[in-house]
Length: 108
Image (cartoon, rainbow, N blue to C red):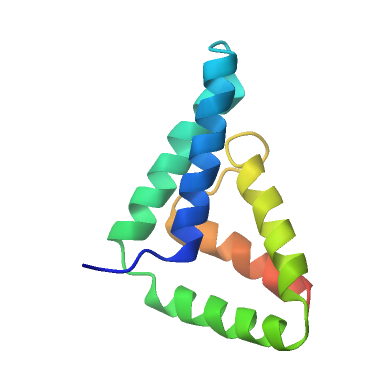
């Protein structure tokens, strides 16, 4: 069995939150679009080879962990995921990881 990356688990958590928003308000078009986009990203990340991007992200996160910047990264990454389908629209898993890389680089 393969290990699920924490970034994919975080997307799944965001999907669950958006689904709860939809349960509370079935007319919530933003949450409906977000769920579609988030599910597509999670599927792409689980199925496609993004090894070089994952390696780069891992290196930056290791550095941020050494400099105590990882908690800021986690907060900003959560905000980014929450905006997907509303104001952020990564086209695929590579673009999503690119957004995470941009966040990590902004903290260095």
